[in-house]
Image (cartoon, rainbow, N blue to C red; front, side):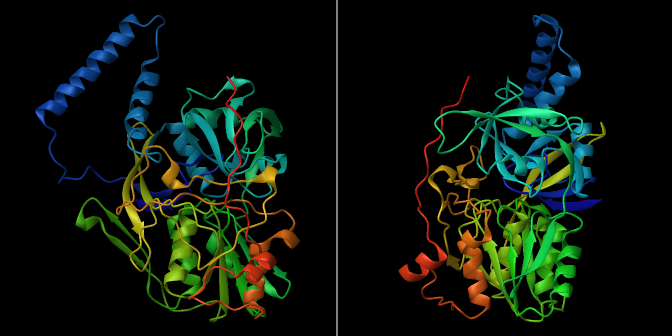
Length: 450
């Protein structure tokens, strides 16, 4: 079986899933170069170290833990998205893509040894407790995160429903770390929400799971009388590749949606849309920001390249690599970066992101400046092919829609109150004041507690 999952930004695991994955049960590539004698010598060295640790470490270690951590260390040294999934983590990941699982409701990655929040999922315990994109989690119930693998940290955050956990947060704009208590719950992800909003159809896509394309189709059916649609992908960290393709296909009549290219020419795969624009050619505006990653970027890039939608907001995260999930005989799996993905125009998003057609920044309160570093800011990330890398952007979205300048601007475009001039994609000073150009500056971050 070979299935691609695009989850979000940064090796995202989680209390939610993230990245572009392909499930592959096939054999090792026959054309791979044979291991050299030096390679086997190094493997003998590993065996020597393993035996020395087993024999002489101050306490008797568990063999399985030593091997699991050695495998994970090998994979995580490649890039932030490759990792080892032990049997329980692999099972949990499969449950997450179906849209229901237990935990806090956050997409996370690891940065400099700490757990970093990529985005809280709408209406989950983490969201309700006030966790934000870019928060660093330094302690869990008073125990330091430093030294844990991402999977181990995620496991500590899971627990019985209604059981509280105290997470210690370092946040930009706060001088000191602080504690937040989150009560665990079953996370049921409703990936699509929609409503009639000030005369336009508003479709919020929070993640790409098995329910997403059906949800978008339902939204278009229910709001077929609307003159156009805002598709909100802000702080959507990704999900399943086939769902990103299907959502793109919903709005396209023909043409390529995305391609993936790996180490070998025969690895190239192209995914095309089928005839039938379910939005009937009505205007579409896609909202993105610094928390929009992977599957979100595929949809935004496809609709942008085909000039089917205007992309509005700030530059997306820049997660443009494909991870293949390869099941192992032990019931675990490895998540291995195997390809980059490209938009229909041949653009690689890796460490670059999607640049919006219309850049509109929010008016961000000083104590809520949420600015992602983007893929280009992750240590050990897969480099952009042309070395022209771009960092992240603001991930702030106001909770009150009347303050949401990006949404207001998008609605105005659909209703004809504003027009788009490709020669002047950045709003004028007057438009920025009305639709909201915020500060580019970032806030200071509190010191990491011991």
